[in-house]
Image (cartoon, rainbow, N blue to C red; front, side):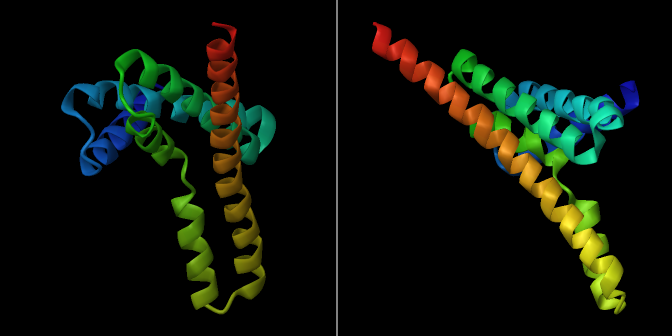
Length: 143
């Protein structure tokens, strides 16, 4: 599990560097990516691959919102690198490969699976972002 956490950490840091995140924020972006990857691995055994990706994306988005406020950075500094380990790149590649090899039945199955995984990532981000925004607005209105 430690190796998997390190893989998520390095993947997130790599994309944070590519997207030119501030140098001081790289370890935090890496920790968000590692957390998301570990949550994905542990929850997909119980809730399936799509459920695990959804829970992990939601956790990554919440952590990104919290870190953005505490570190006074844009949310995307932590969110984009944190979500990168969850992106279904492998299934997308296998989908295209199946289409190119004229295995249309397998390609359609993989296409639906890839779409559901990508949708789970998007839904997790949207839900966490919406809840966070509602909380901050309610906090602002009370003052």
